[in-house]
Amino acid sequence: MTYPSKTNQVWQDLENHSRRISDLDLNRLLADTKRFANSHLQVEHLLVDWSRQLVDQPIQNSLDQLAANSRVHQFLLSMNRGDLVNNTESRAATHVEQRSLHASDESRKSMFKIAEEIRDGSLHGHSGKSFTDVVNVGIGGSHLGPELVYRALTQKQGPRVHFLTNTHPAARRAILDALDPDSTLFIIASKSYGTYETLDNAQFIRQWMNERVSPDGDLRNHFIHVTSNPEQITNNETVLRVPSSIGGRFSIWSAMGLSIAIAFGIDVYQDLLAGARSIDNHVLETTDIAQNLAIKLALLAVWNTNVLKTESHLILPYDPRLQLLPAYLQQLEMESNGKSTSRDGEPINRHTSPIVWGGVGTDGQHAYHQLLHQGTRKYSADIIVTQSASSQNDNTNVDDWILANAVAQSTVMFAGNQVSGDQQFKNIEGRHGSTIFVLNELNAFNLGALIALYEHKVACLGHLWNINSFDQWGVEAGKRLADDVYGFLHLGEAQNVPATTADLLNKIKKI
Image 1 (cartoon, rainbow, N blue to C red):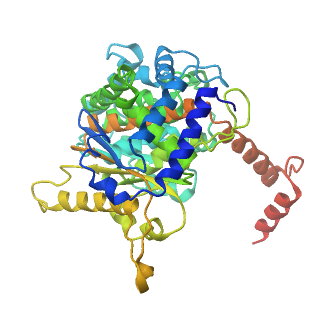
Image 2: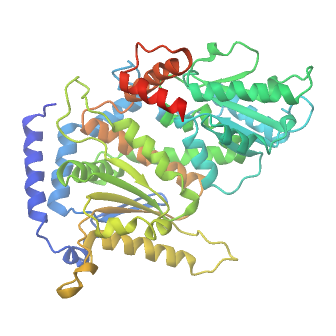
Image 3: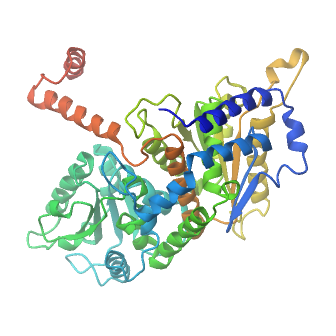
């Protein structure tokens, strides 16, 4: 991968900055009365503060120049126009467009009609019972987004929603054993309609239903299929189509969000879309790179990953309702930008996506934060805080205590805690950058904004690294290899299985 000469000079400037900042007194940076003003942006009810990142104004200026040279904002506009940005699959990436679909759009209207009919009972099971439970059968992008939203929001007034992802018998039993087949709806969510886990679970569920429902029971209303390949469904069950130009990890804004609309109603789902649109408007209309929040986050990631050589990036929500956010962003970032070949087909000579991981912040403080503070690995972190987390009946100090912990952790990561003399075992070096995200409350609008912001950040990063953020050929390769191993286990076909693999599998059979 090669860069224009001006861009190469910016990279050299950034390397020089990294050596310069290694000697800076970080506590002096924190004491700078102008630092916060120059290191935060707010869009709607989302505040983002990067004053605890290892950057100063000259570094920010160089990063902005990198974005300008790379024409990253023009790339975002191109993606929004529907230009071909997924070059390996000859597709556009139209997930942003889905957020602007009017309720009268045919696909959106069908989705909303089904959701409302399920909620009001006019669409019911074979026995006439209203649906009390919905099982979303899908994996990866077909479940992480919907489950994140379902766990995060609290105003549930519709049927209960469950998420079945893998084929392990224990996972199936944990969900199905508690359900009444007469009042359960199954959403079979698979963009390709070729995902083994989803199709195997769908087959198992259909058998489970047939064993529990009278032979003359009409089960068509108990199944809804969400896919980009509707021709794969040959029965007369309901199908909602997802455009092939929407990747699974970006599909929450399409019919893949059906379970959300059923659980919360279409008004809440439209609030989710509206929050995402507010970020779309900010990102697409803000031509000043220094004021564009998605570009800023991408540039900070480039600084941490490519210049400071961080190895991993943590997602630390200080709200247990966001406990699935790390897993969701893990897929979004790593599946999108975990690439080693450029858009030009050349090997990448810089690191791309870091390892993304994390968990609920207060829990992590009593587990792996020890490594974060006194370990030897380089990392960066996003710390997410929601205000108004407590109800009127809760301790009114709870929000302040959670906020205090979040800010304190960010500060220690950044500035450390230097100890001299014979107390060196207490020393914390610091010098790990973190960004604090603050939502004034956790609702559908703000959650939609947060998710959309990360999506735009990921797209910007892919462009800055000159990689395709919208394919996942590594995932496809793993599926093919699993088919070979499965063939050996069940058919004895050994031609595509290495000898060591065959020996392992034969040994396992004897345990």
